[in-house]
Image 1 (cartoon, helix red, strand yellow):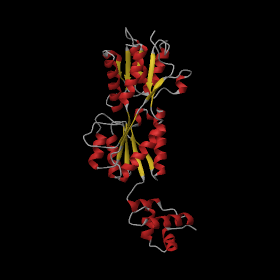
Image 2: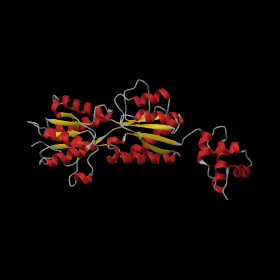
Image 3: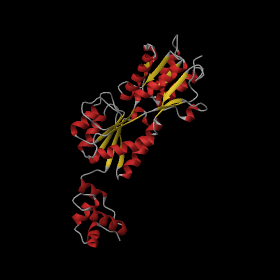
Image 4: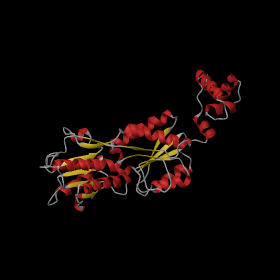
Length: 337
């Protein structure tokens, strides 16, 4: 027999309102009563109607992540790992993750629909921009969110990010220590905050070593494999090409790795290569690309889930976490010939 709220209330000798509020964790019901109700619900096999529960609590029991899939996100294995971590972390808190596909350059409209329609309890802002209207919109609406990456903002906000500047600086210092002086960099669009930060770290390391950056060696390209391929090919066609290249993301890095091979040059010997987040093993085989590595995408996703749960509850609406990257040596960099 299906146990409903009325049956559960009668078995406990409590009103349906008290049982409902106990099951939904309201503070006006004592902890002892809440524990008693939860135990009875488990023993009797009671499962709340999700629609009724959402109407009662006014919560959607879900977090949204709006993503412009025109940005080749499905081809990024790290994105899938992050999503898996967020999903697991939210699941432990009783929430689902909704991934909402948005038209490129029209994300803000989707944000408005989600917030105005109360379709989610909080939002994760992915791939933050240097100047991000999505963050400003959520701040104006006082809506719970966590930014996956930092942005310029006069108001405090919650975020999870890596020390992008430190990672690029360390990678560049490694190449300089090998004796490289003509070092190229391939960047994602510099409107993306991580790309701007990594570019800054690269330039800082060069100047600290007394090397004046050359504009022709620093290339901004689309955030995809083709962009990385074309950028490295243009560097190799210079009259005086670089002896080493740093690529600031794994998507373009895959194209960069292919471009070196197609040029007939030997990666690690003719041209040193370091890629942020590395290049997938099946693409680089039998080589291992030297990488700036960060915690696994799954661990990052779990951290983001913890932060958004804190923002939704109101306990820590502006909590943030900065994670340090490290260099993982491979066999694609070394002293110049």
